[in-house]
Image (cartoon, rainbow, N blue to C red):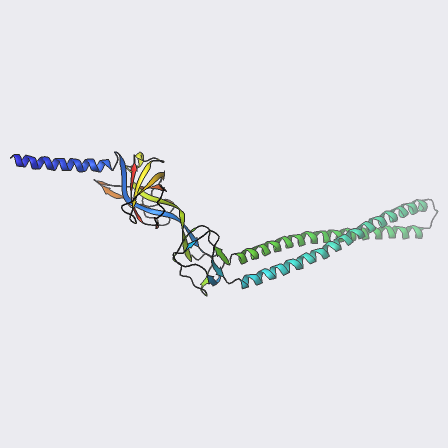
Length: 325
């Protein structure tokens, strides 16, 4: 009988210890999850123009520095386009000089027509007065009247000509501005035939070779940045209220399972999609069964602190994280 009570007591004690251990790591002192992964920024290398690859200067797992040349496309077709655009721009600028000169000549002719019209009007008014006084013949008066009307007609034609060349100048200026933009775009496209690293990191999945054709926007390979690592940890919704930014975290990775890395809670995700939506704005995280119903999980971002220099971290590595509450 005593033996039976002893076994029952030990069983109850074990259950109590297990329960205490569970709550110790799930809400009392620590929040634990094994549903976590190492993460870093990934620069996707894709060309902004289309063309054939003329040179590949990196290989898989190579460490590259920001600004280092990674890849080059054939630049000759883009150089030709730039040359044509520059030639057209130079031609338009020369045409502008001609139009501007004709506009200035039209202005001079207009000024001359204005002076002639003033003179013809003065003479006409004088002959009109003399004609009323019978001091000149009607034929002489009508001749001066015709000369005045001719000067007015010449003045109107000079004004129209001046306005025409003024409009031509504006049109030519618009054309030049448009062609300057085309030249700038051609220069930009030529520059984009050389692709440089935008950050320090390791090259991954580089299978492109010289001679391959690549279209604009095609993802060729990636560069995993090596200067900013963090943990994407998915915690149950029951634990989220106790997690705060700045809390200390103990991290164990699958790469180095017996080495503890210090971390710090950076922020807690404020949303989790209830339906799978690959590439959606709100992430979908698989819920887990807890007692009776499914608990949603929310992402907690944890930044790494004081990572040992000998560690070579890898994106996607499994992590166990303990947040000190």
